[in-house]
Image (cartoon, rainbow, N blue to C red; front, side, top):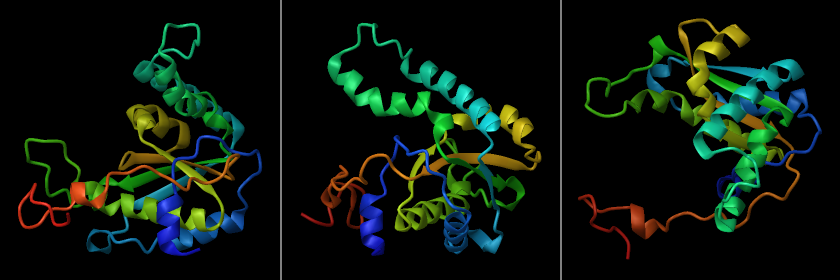
Length: 212
């Protein structure tokens, strides 16, 4: 698959078939993903491929609880607007079926290997993610090339302590994201909506359009 096509069609999948993702498909995706850029070649990323039903169920219960705290109960009798209900339905379905994803890939990173140059700024620290998330995106693109869809979520990172105990993650590793992966029950997207280039690319000064 052309890399540009993969970029334009790797959306968020919330409906999966029961079919497992073969070992060789996962291996090939990890093999490609490991070449992502990261600071100082420190290679902080580690992955846990969770396929055990009991473990997935425990993660799913926590995810659904957090989702309901964020978006409200899934009781369709509540007085919720039709538009909002339609917008939330895929997300709600995913929350209620989180454990049904064929594999849940837990993205971990060794904290000491991250170069966090923005730690002292008066804002949310994000720079450490530069050595983590390119690998995740590479993985999603490599899986897309193999016909495997993905969903990236960080909601469960709020439960890091419990997940660390559940999955035996050492204290020196943080959890950075969760990637559900499987063969999609619906076609890959072809018309993802994003802002046009003219709205977010600037020339020399913020707010001065480079195009248009």
